[in-house]
Image (cartoon, rainbow, N blue to C red; front, side, top):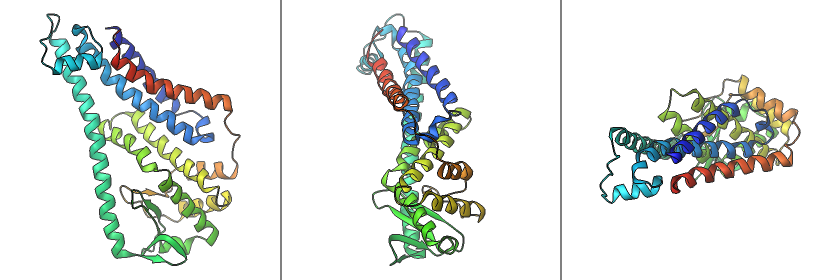
Amino acid sequence: MITAAALAALAMACAVGSWRFTTARWTSRAPRLAIIVWQSLGVAWGLATTGTMLAYAVQPFGTGVLPGLIVFAHGEPPPHAWDALHVLALIAGLTSLAVLVVVLLTAGVQALRARRRHRMLLALISHDDPGMPGVRVLAHPSAAAYCVPGLRSQVVVSEGALKLLSEDELAAVLAHEAAHVRERHDLVLLPFAALRRAMPWSKVVSDAQAQVELLIEMAADDRARRYCSPRRLATALLRFGTAGAMPTPHGMMGLHAHNVMARVDRLIKPGPELAVSARYGFIALSVTLLTTAPFLWVIQL
């Protein structure tokens, strides 16, 4: 019973922390670190929420969550304290865990299929440009720039984008998209998109996905700044924002008009770096979250 209470407290703390985290101001100063914190909050919340129900369900066995589930799976008869509430908790916990796993796998499979279809489409309606090795040029008049993540990743720009952007702005956009590919931001975003599908009614989940999407764009901006002028990237963002850019295809990572001004302000007037002590503090928080929930699944309190 103590284990269930501890997991419930952790789940509540993660939910409150996620809600408070959506309004935090430091995240734009360290987007990669903020993404790590978001990921640790999501993992800890999922394990704590399902673990709370399972810990209560196996409480009559006098074991922790995993040991109790192993005993139950081996066919040991439930003790006399086993009643309808414990049965319902077991069903709810296993169902919640299964839903999270299935939704994550389904989102991953759908993304892979969408990318495979899009690569086949690109082979028909795009071409290589000798001046931009490794980049596919899409035959479309609207401005578009995105990447197709995966083992056979591709960076795609449209003919409309080539006409819209100057040479330096185009180089900045390509550096931004290459950052998405290099850092596999599609894998970072996948769990949050899957959780949004499982809980479309949750404002916390919706805000978390929106925040991670923005942080991913900021992290790609930071990577691109190593190879291009921040002002050129900012002007490219403004051009895309005012030109009515083509929507990014499903399953791809693209340069779009969401939160353009926040990114432009950050590029033109970068804030001070996050203090080292604060960085270590958030790293310690992430490690604590990622270790506490699994630990509570194993031990018996």
